[in-house]
Length: 330
Image 1 (cartoon, rainbow, N blue to C red):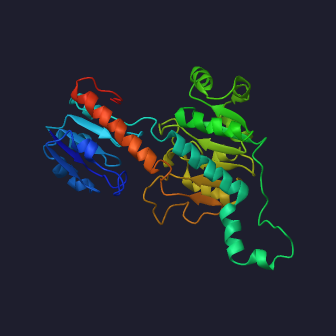
Image 2 (image 1 turned 90 degrees about the horizontal axis):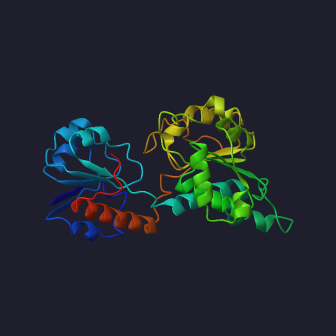
Image 3 (image 1 turned 180 degrees about the vertical axis):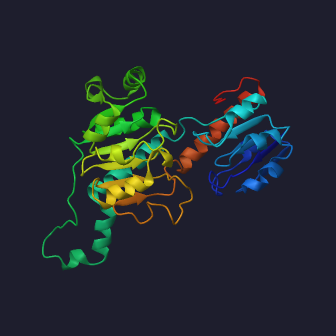
């Protein structure tokens, strides 16, 4: 059995072991990164290929006759032409729900950035401002208490649910735009909170979500329906004091429209862990945009989550080899 990892560095820059995957293979190769033009050559006669962001097109699939299994080392799998794989009997799997807690935690790091400005205040103290200040305290910008504020959640899967639970712990009101009423009710019932807190979570339309939210967090997959969801029209509905947060997919927002909304102060802030183009381009509309916080697609990446991801992939491979594949996306 030959197993090839095409872009292993993002998952494992050297702080975890590949041995759990290597144990399945007679021949095992890990590439930190793979230029797209070398993908076919590097897959070669591999039966199992693991990847994160490498695009697997129909042409690549047709050029790799030994390929039997593709393991996407992430939840999103839009980098793989799943239809082409299905047509050739190639199993494609993903890694569901491995980073739920970490991403939800990151959402609130963004929210608390805007409400408390901890880094800015700490920097001002280290610059000597507190030493020279005549009063026992000062603040550089208004501070905001989360209790009583409204958090809007677009998409109510595992991450959206966890964000909801944390928001309720802060005393926030939560409104949700889910895929359907049925999916909302099912997700709401699954919340790990009291029934009295569940009663505070209410479904709303997309338009109501944008109008009413003080903080609006996106948690849906990128589909034709969600592409450019946050465009000029929808942004115009938001409060001028509102903050938009995107830890889902860069394509869910119209980046130029978000920059324009920030520059005109139609919204108070934007925070993102994802962009339309990654790594970031110097021509990105969000590069150096005002009141815009961007992290380099790292919300998923604590060591704990990466170890969990590998554990799930081990089970995916075991199930595939046993003829009973799980987490199949095609």
